[in-house]
Length: 333
Ligand SMILES: Nc1ncnc2c1ncn2[C@@H]1O[C@H](COP(=O)(O)OP(=O)(O)OP(=O)(O)O)[C@@H](O)[C@H]1O
Ligand SMILES: [Mg+2]
Image (cartoon, rainbow, N blue to C red; front, side, top):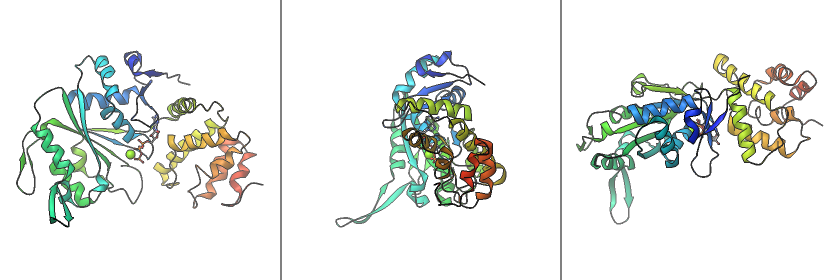
């Protein structure tokens, strides 16, 4: 088994490419633990070569939080600048979910109504920010626009992004032109591209072309175990159920089936769910773990029950597989 270590950021240059590095997260979130090679790619592209990046992967794989760590947590930047031997800079980030934009016109301006003014229009927050970036003097600032949940928005809005994500001058529908911000802004997007779901739009080549760096974010089962152990330690949860490994194996198997055969699509294995399961199991050490998985990891799957006994047998051995044989909704007595 690999023995990758977790390095704090101030020891970044000691870490190997496949080691894990701990990044400080935005307030209230657990610290992100990420393979160094992922940070190498994103940091270089966003902050050194100035290339747009798209992070894709399943829900809960940490895409949004990772972008936030690199763009909204200033403490993470100086140690990385030192490790890369570049001058320190500040990141100015504008982050927005594309799902909140209802029409392509709203990327530029919003219609409002007030008793005093009747119907009136004002610049969207995005256009205000683009205008602000356009007006800034050159300096130690890096401007990043973070689009959350790309490919889940209205298709017309996503088409309209093609015009906005560009190095050239930006022209609003009312004719106003911003000449400098196109060259200054690096775009980063996160999406569930590749996840088989009718709710995710098909990825469009013209949009993908605007993001030369395409990084799939999905921790390996080994990294997941190390990350979970660290997160459980931070929660002061010292009892780690012995079935941790089996749970991770089942999660990995589910993802494999999702990608290969389109099965178990209603399940989202990943750190947030694993953490919740381990907290419950850690609280009640006598709890039957396979049964707990039935109501958590497998809790949302109703049409794939016939596969469960074989999966449980593989994970826990024959005796425990009986948990999966019970009809859905019936408790173990
Ligand atoms: N590598 C990791 N290290 C630590 N925590 C993680 C990691 N990956 C995910 N998490 C945990 O999972 C939470 C959810 O992550 P996040 O919302 O960034 O996922 P996402 O990939 O953007 O999901 P979605 O596709 O649903 O938007 C994080 O706040 C964090 O608590
Ligand atoms: Mg997200």
